[in-house]
Image 1 (cartoon, rainbow, N blue to C red):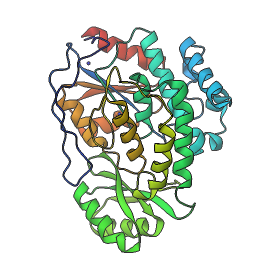
Image 2 (image 1 turned 45 degrees about the vertical axis):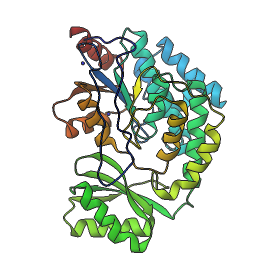
Image 3 (image 1 turned 90 degrees about the vertical axis):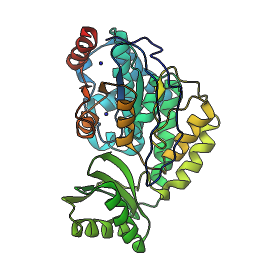
Image 4 (image 1 turned 45 degrees about the horizontal axis):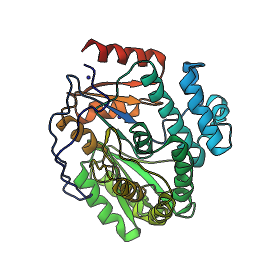
Amino acid sequence: MHARVSDTAGRIVRRAHTKCSATPRTFEYIDLGGDMKFAFVFPGQGSQSVGMLNAFGDHPVVRETVQEASDALNQDIGKLIAEGPADDLNLTTNTQPVMLTAAYAIYRAWRADGGPAPAIVAGHSLGEYTALVAAGALKFRDAVPLVRFRAQAMQTAVPVGQGGMAAILGLDDETVRAVCKEASTAGTVEAVNFNAPAQVVIAGHKAAVEKACEIAKAKGAKRALPLPVSAPFHSSLLKPASDQLRAYLANVEVDVPSISVINNVDVAVVHEPARIKDALVRQAAGAVRWVECVQAMAKAGVTNVFECGPGKVLAGLTKRIDGNLGGAAIVDPASLDDVLKQVSAQ
């Protein structure tokens, strides 16, 4: 959403494996090693824009990454990124592979230009797949069609028009959970994205989401904003998508990551391929516990969190979650150079 560290960047030796609950818990780390402990976070759907890689021009690894994605999907991903149109870029089935490609291309540019590996990585929703690719757990050529399949499965899990999402601003997490419980008489509605303090996204049946928005406003929410999405992402209504993902992932090779990856659904670091797959399966229909992910990084001794990929959403959330964390967003060659200077100066 940092002096140089080695590629191995330390490791986690004690972890309390947690499940999503009303009483969030994190886990304990020893020192990660190195003088500057920085993390990379990768954005999810919503940060895309036409021309988002144009500033990198003909950077060899960026061009190579985009071509690899095009080959994997048999589609001109480079043209879609550079020229759009926006309506096509914003289709979920295009957005997910495109965002993975763009963020990973920028990460590869960082490494190619001399940037060291981060101590820890994480990604918001779709961004978790980018984090796993950056950590060497997923091969990029496998991840691109995987996230397209994920997009298709999530999009079709609930008939269009039956689901919805909304952002609730100005209420604490427990109050939002209580709002959802009260609104559940109209259908399923759940807190699904804990993005920052007093910024929670809810999802579920459209009528229940609308009722929750009304209740939230009555309880003092500053805003309750319906989101322009066509599916209730990360709600339990997407269980069919999780089931499809489980079957698909059974045939995808996952390796032990070389960098610790904090997952969304448990706020945990797991190294075993089977457990990595399981977390991805549950994430489709489980809450994104982003606040806790960033807090876990700080607890691990991370001092800087750098967002790697289009947009600057996660960099903004980091400041709201923990004002003591430094960081920036790497979105173009200029910002990449700035972060390189920060890292090299330590």
